[in-house]
Image (cartoon, rainbow, N blue to C red; front, top):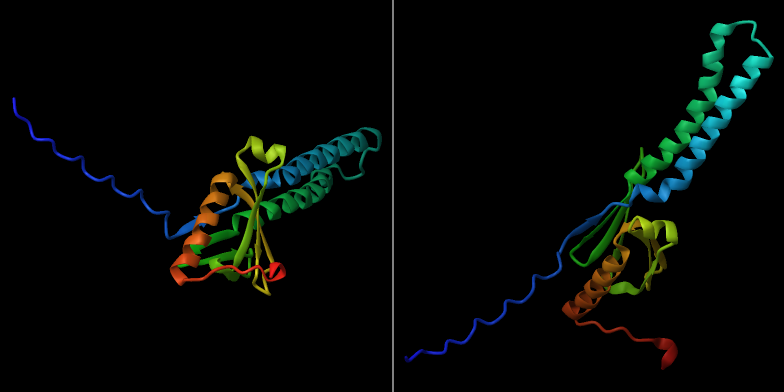
Length: 183
């Protein structure tokens, strides 16, 4: 039998990293605020139950209202922590990082990726259990020397992605980093 050897097709380059990426922080970072609120609410309820038992009120109809006031305040603080995290986003597009924050009034700030000098990941044990962590970006930008991204999902993979994106942006722009302190 005579068979022709056909070369295998050239491997296709792997899909490039996405040009756009949006990250929202995980609510895991608010765990402390949520646990604290639950403990405070339980304490208020227990204190209120003891007070009602040993010091009967003159107007019993007001007792639920008296309990509701501190509980609403505690719940409000926990809700504010949730809203602050839910209203934060980090968007990467066109060689730029833009982060938006704010609940009622919004603000947006940007940092060019080529200005990023170092990307550090910090992942405390509790956050590690849930697969989130903190990314700390050091830059040469005078307005944003350090950008801290809290609650980033899969922070190790994201750190690698961001480092590669910074290097690619520098290559695309024909830029090199020069360490002036080492000259």
